[in-house]
Image (tube, rainbow, N blue to C red; front, side, top):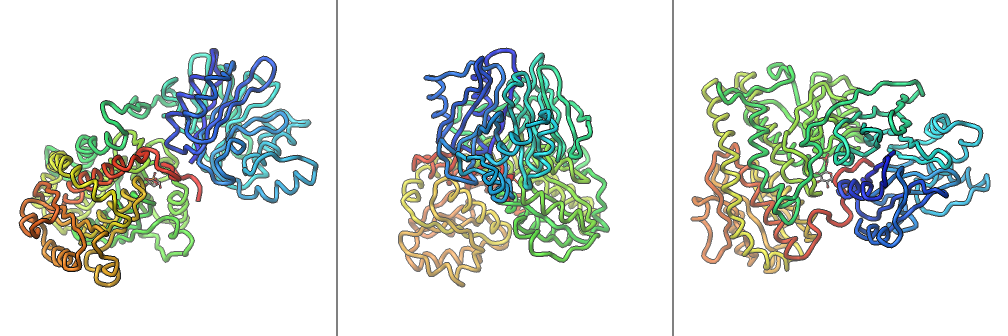
Length: 604
Ligand code: G6P
């Protein structure tokens, strides 16, 4: 979604606002804007499109302010024009907003009836107008409180009030907002990353909080308006670092970071000395009746993989569902189940709502998250961090394999607790898991072979991905990666389903990517591959050396290492991701910021 920054500084804020917006651009990049207090009033600069356009504007018309706010937008209400770009102004109010104001239409009608004139198509402007109205006769914090009492929806705000040049206000209901503590300077930001260049001392606002900051302090109030204390934490440097190194794109770096990332993840969930899965959090897997996993996008596919691993190994029923559907279909749940929210950001609105839905039904809750300060992490009974470091590329890669690693360790721990495997088998599986990072690195060596296949794939309009067993969720994830960043239509299918529909799509212009490393199902998948070949469809087979022997002459093959099927989804993820990455690069697409997408989707 959108990204927010606010700085009560002692020196010019322009450069720092822009630096912060660069870090927030992963949340949205339709338009950007900044505003600050100049000697003679508020100065504001906005531009449609990428942040670069705003920088061009600022080069001609710089800000002079030492106190200001900034915003990068992922449009919800109104097209991404300059006029709809934040900050928005009304009377004495200038503000930036992340989220959605659900009752904006009725509020707008009332405010219009009162004679207020609107300049934009956004829901945000309603908040600015409303707050300006509330300011007459009330001090700023009180006016903000009564504004917040009138708006419905999920939002985070950073606000400047004319005549209060040493103060900013913030509020959150739903999307996150952090307060950063500097030396004689204070900050508001959508996340730790946003304020990372300025401070690592951060307080996370609770849902419903609003805050007033000046140069030296933050006064926090809860939803009822009572003063509240929110602990100031020192966040680890890894939460504020954002470097591409020698890579062209964050996504490329993050793909190659995976072996190291997964090593960290796996080491957190297995005891490397004893060879046991040491799953923290005190969940009794022996008596647990069911697991309900909820997530969106890539996190959902990681959850699906978890289902395959956990059910097979531990004989523990696992339901997986996209969070956006789950919460509205009134699913049948029971209190003996554990809900696991899968989410890199820990902020995805649908996943959060699904999690809360389960909690309200009395279910115990866990979150598999990357952002340990996130809302989900704070609201669950147990947090299982994925430890893969900050992920910037909008298309998720290293978070995926780290999420799968956590669930693989959970499968082993649950299987042991339920007596489905003995200690020797547990130790064997842990050894297999510890092998995964090295094999993932080996699989990524197929990159040169992958590059050669790219021109043909980049010409395709449609691409099919096929897999069986645990390779099916990986096929779904492969297709998602390709469509997200290269804009080629792609579908993942269970290989056995091919003949029930998608086979009708096969022709010489529709490549099929078959993911089939050696396992007990490989031959069945290869039979499906033959069905495609028989109809003239071009095939790229992703397999190991043994599987490659089954490739027909002339068939394109990407060869990865042989591995235990238990870790094959981890080992074969990097080549699948690299394939999508190189197709997108070949097409000249903006890999790290694909059109219309945002990394952290904090609206429904
Ligand atoms: C967005 C991103 C995806 C991500 C999904 C879920 O759609 O573009 O890459 O998988 O949100 O995000 P989460 O932070 O909950 O894992």
